[in-house]
Image (cartoon, rainbow, N blue to C red; front, side, top):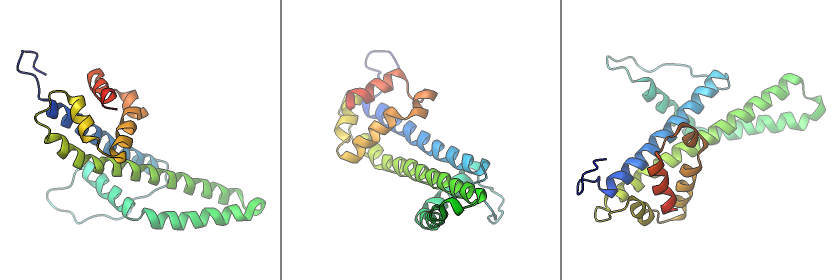
Length: 185
């Protein structure tokens, strides 16, 4: 930010930047969750796309895979949920391998839920960013957030962003940005 009087960054730009930062971090967390599932071998990516001269970046590929996971999330819940229930119904008759498989399936479903929440939250930020960019007459970024935090979904999202452990641990937001969010809550 420019410190000269009259040269302050407009409030709406500060707010849009803050929301974009949150969006990027949510998508990054979803990609890291995907990476974790692949590393734990609970998820395996097979096949390839047609090779073209302009190869997609690793992040673009992860976003594609995330899209596929989210598209198939409900059928995954049904299939794996049925499998988990079957193992639990066996009770003491289930083998150690079956119990371990059910635990792995449960962990995978939890990761799918997490990825779905993170991506859905990041998508919700698109319209919020657009709304914030229209508040050019406001002077305080907290007022921009407050005036655009118009429904329960956005209030929930703001609380999620403010209390997200990864964002807190990594210092995603500056102290000033955290104060802006606190004043808007």
